[in-house]
Amino acid sequence: MKTTKEVSISLRNNTEKEQVAKRLLETILEKYSLDKWILCNEVVIEEGASGKAFPIIRLSVWRDKEDGMLAQFIHEQYHWIERGHEETMIEAMDELRKIFPNAPIEKPEGGGSDKSTYVHLIVCRLEFLGLKEILGEDRAFALVSGNSNYTWIRKMALDRGSEIDRVIMKYFPESIKH
Image (tube, rainbow, N blue to C red):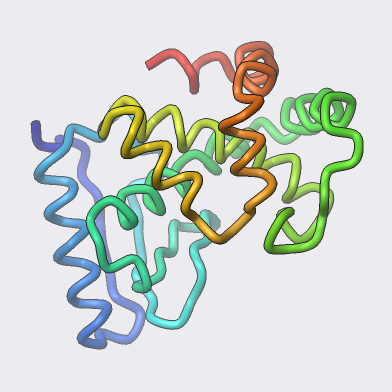
């Protein structure tokens, strides 16, 4: 079941925690076939940092369990659907604003900005769908619902997923057809 796409993993500071996180990610890439979720093949692991998708994927080390690291990896990969499709994302966000007109913006419920909140409705829904395919529905649900970041967004990704799925299918159909 090994991932066949090459993923370059580097360490920002080469700390012990970064080394452990790297070995954990390597184990995940060996254990699961993640090729269809890899949109960026460059990953840096940085202790004390939060996950980021651009210009390369940056993962934090606080996810010391396999499922948590996998969820973080999939989440940041899904941000790459935006790359080169910024106008499409704007249209999708406008549609989501109509479905969720009073979305909280401030963290931890929202994304910290209007744009981040609406982008994360898509990314967190795709994260759940990817994890569901990889780990099964129960583990995926536990991971997404138990995450303390974007709490309202993640709740909507689970409770109102079919509404978000319609937007994803309209604007990013290739990302939902796994």
